[in-house]
Image (spheres, rainbow, N blue to C red):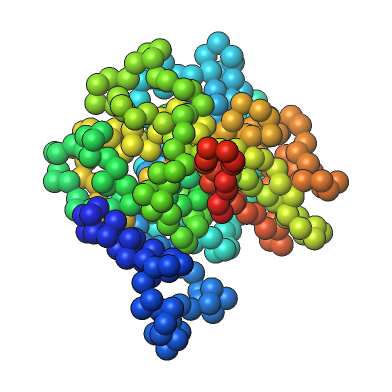
Length: 350
């Protein structure tokens, strides 16, 4: 990961050649070597794919930001004045990024006593409004840029090693009390889950697509943020919750990575614009990815519209507004599929 991008690409091509039908016979013709090189997935334990030095979470889905803004500020002031000018982000906690499947303990902290009157102060207790956030994240690779040197748009792809799925757990009631004036803290530092497999950026080239915004023209970004190849990736993401009494998880939302206004290259470039040194193993996340329809909202905050409506868990009779307090026997999962168009048919790959 720390090597320059040409090394990643050469390694990927070598692996493809070893595994592809009609490729090199070094593995296919050598059973003993194949047994050493290929280990059944059920025989291995998945770990974090890299030692994460720093973790930054962005807020780059316009649909998500608009939904949250309407809830808390009204339709006329949904987006803050800066939102269309830069990718908004904050620094997260790298030590509590866990590989998928790691148990996450419901957090405790300060909760606002009266939901409508903050002057009543706070009380200590367990989070009652636990939420998920459907996100994608990407690992940085390559040699770090020296402090003071920025990463330009034309350099960005050579610093993005690959993507993972992410669930950024959120304690909404803790966040409500603490976030003014500096943003989330304890409500976000207790757990973030990512998939163990990194999909290389080169593998996603066939899935490039326009963003849901189409263009960035009103306003046009500052020059350093303009991407001549502006777009995202056609990655369909679904999220499911399995209650304690459910046989199978119930899907609660289906969204797509195309629902990003600020793409991953713009996120990286903006992160480095101050001269911040970006290192291999750093993790950057998109923020919650939501679409325009209700079924594509990427969090329970949006799906339940701040707790005003119940959300069915798939085709079952079970409903939620947020994740239950007795969530010890519940399971949560995010999955993705990549889609691209060929001349006469649609192909999908998991």
